[in-house]
Image (spheres, one colour):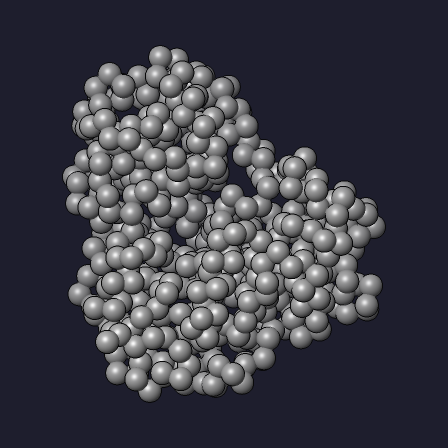
Length: 492
């Protein structure tokens, strides 16, 4: 019988998994984290677990928080297993399991008073976020905070009982200011260029709507360090739960499967202190921008590059896409010819070596990462991962055939069927709009570029318009396979 995950079962669990060397009940809260999803539990929580296992910094325990219905589902499952998570790290030739325990509780989802009260506690010195790229109320075209969003507008009128992450953070900061308590540091752990600046603009932008003086205080007194985070972490399904039971004999309601590789680069800007994460591999640097630029353009851009042609070819797993010579060749050509040449130098990093590492990570057959996950939320991800590279190349007078083709495959995907006629399920918060626009774009590619809130000035650049229009027409005329063949042969 599988062993149910609980603190009382550490001795039994140790037969197949690494278990904590510390007492989770003895941890004290120092961090509130919004968005206790798979990536957080495979990344920030693992680094903290490593640190706690060294016997250090046990006053930096995690308390979870959230605002979405899915956050409450996660809270209930984790509460039933003493806030523990089984993390399974997988490579082609090995799999290992560990039980992590840095989380000591989760605030009631929707209880703004309880969340604000916790944020106002002096012991809370860091508030961190993993809320996905689409959770920051960013205008896709300008990449600036959108103060007109209905959820932000609601919070501005109801800041004592807000509904958004940023409303709760602002209310917590205001409570600390009014009580004479120094503000906590706000640390984004999402894949957004300048994520600290973006988070500051969201909190201060909301504050502008509430009280301009409060906004000035936020900008002058609250730290928002930038950071780059990286670890491939697929969604959890019954497949992963069954693998955990069958391989390790552990019953976990929401385990996390991930690769062994992980990386975290942070600016050291924590006025109230921080865990000594450098002891467990976190890089603290004066400027994160080169690292995040590299990661977002090469890794996240690479995911977007393979996602849509693979989906149109009915490929299910990412490693299967990498086994397809056309998809893999498309990735390598776009990366080496169009993306990597415009990525600025990164300290102590060879970009060709970095791409080779990405290739190996994408090819890992044990991860079970799905093409559907990579295709998710393209309306938020394309403006962050693909379109900036295209805009940079256009500004330099360079070609964009490959990058324009990436976005053309996205447009074809949003039509809602693969090349074989298989139905593609809605996979974007804006799916209705995207699918309707994709149907018009089949005969008129300009309709897709007409979404200027996504494409911005690129939609006005003749060279980009021509490359995109030709790519989309070719996909519709010849299909995904033939289009990839033409591109790789230099005939597109």
